[in-house]
Image (tube, rainbow, N blue to C red):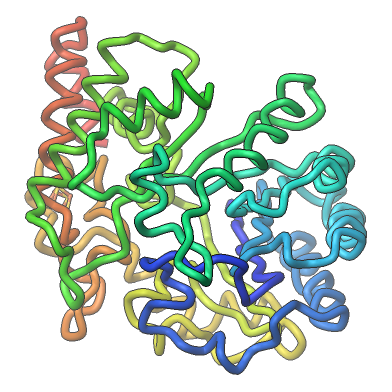
Length: 380
Ligand code: SF4
């Protein structure tokens, strides 16, 4: 088992993106949770994770420090917690520490912390300023692009100097925007080599505001720009995953393919939840009901809640005859949700996903992938 744990060290944020699933979505539990994770909750989380690694065949644990904005945590505490995490479970399994930040608070002291504990850094940015600053705004409604890019630049300089790992960027897709322009801005202007474009947090209960084909067109335009330039060093996670899946390889995303990873979220008060993204689907089902202070990992694994969440991950019944199902698996659980059938629906972005699968499959066949090899990959 690969375990991914989203640790909400801060449940407040220094900016106010209008699409934020934490603060502008259906789940409002953040209102009653502490702003920052406290020492006791973190201390209780360590034996919880340690027992998970000691008594289960866990190949790797990824700890993602998340928020809100995780860099609102005092640096000294963040750094000490990284050290304590490594001490508690680093000898039991392959451990990766990561942080997802809006980048606004990054400075040299933070980079020292990331370097000291080999923390991978992801920064959220939606493209050039005229795109980013429409929705990724501060609490006064002002754009954040300039301040994010300052932090991003510091991180990239540190990565170039081999002090930290290369920085990844996350961009939320808005199909009104030009995917090629975003690619060129990221790669040519900002020298970003690793990024991902995320389909926004909608589902059958809360439908996307634009025609689904527009999201497909965005992904296809992005693929055209990427493939035509043959920028070998540029990795776009969703597209790399689709290419890999169509040649019989693994997915690099939990939301595509048959992921075997178990994802948990730990809130600032220690509450245990499922994958953080499900907050936008059915907040009621997200929570286990216990916390790291009173539930053991063994009890969690054998709980009805965990059984139900695992069962919900399998491909939806209406996808079973789809030619893409082994690569797609019905898409992200979040995008499948409606109030009646829960996760047993094909992705609300199904038509967009089919567009990009066809585009990538044709590209691979034009470059020599045999129809038989593609069929074998899709039959896995
Ligand atoms: S492409 Fe659509 S029908 Fe096929 S597996 Fe994905 S969501 Fe299901």
